[in-house]
Length: 119
Image (tube, rainbow, N blue to C red):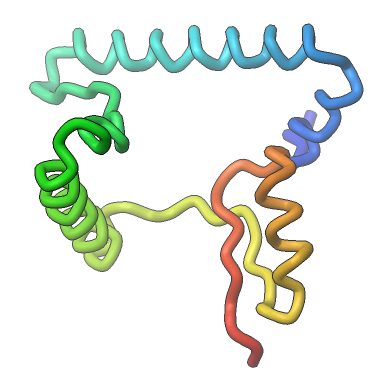
């Protein structure tokens, strides 16, 4: 059976009610923790953990900005080098910005919605 597009799967869950979404989030969370656990116990010398993007923003704003600048610089270098590939759900022209925002706010896409300039 061919896998459905991720945004279609998420969109269908809206019609199942809150219980269906909660079950899916619990299952996805359990899968994520399972993968993280396996990644950390494998003898490959690599480790993984969760990254809290907003840690320190409220109580240490200067340190937060410095860490954010350093982290984003490193991430953008990795993207530029081709080591990381951003997950883009849709590229929508600037003239359709309202529909791009609606799509991004719908929580039915997997990845980022990117607004691109007109050709």
